[in-house]
Image 1 (cartoon, rainbow, N blue to C red):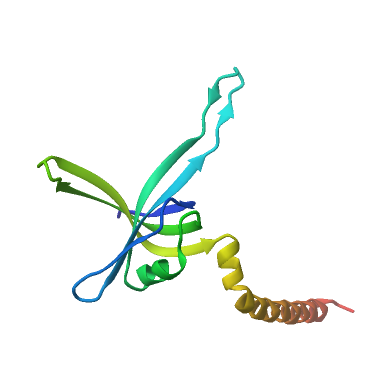
Image 2 (image 1 turned 180 degrees about the vertical axis):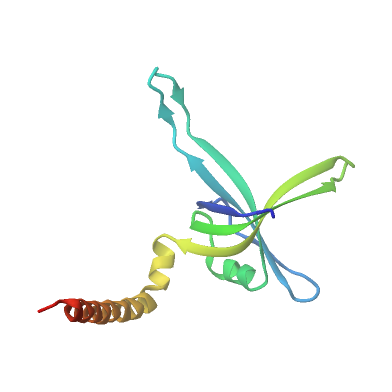
Length: 148
């Protein structure tokens, strides 16, 4: 058994490049930056911040969502798998590319929070009612077990 799973949390480096293939299937590509903070070791050695760039590929409905809502600078949480491919450039030189094929995406930050505020309010109101009901049933179960 093997696992090919990637989880990234980072910032979009440029607006998505979206294309529709002949069969009307949408594909979107964008770059995502992830960073590790710099630090100073106990001996005083300074380790600088390190930024990695990742090529993300979105297909079909997820690509259409990216086209509508994702822009440069947005913060994304993504889950996907790593794929490597090669191609020959214009000069006949073989090039290698590592891409993340995205299976799941969550938009984070202020713009996505504003979009989901109304539905979040409704679900949070429902969530607040459920725990109260659960607490009441737990309390009654505890009271039933008491010998007095």
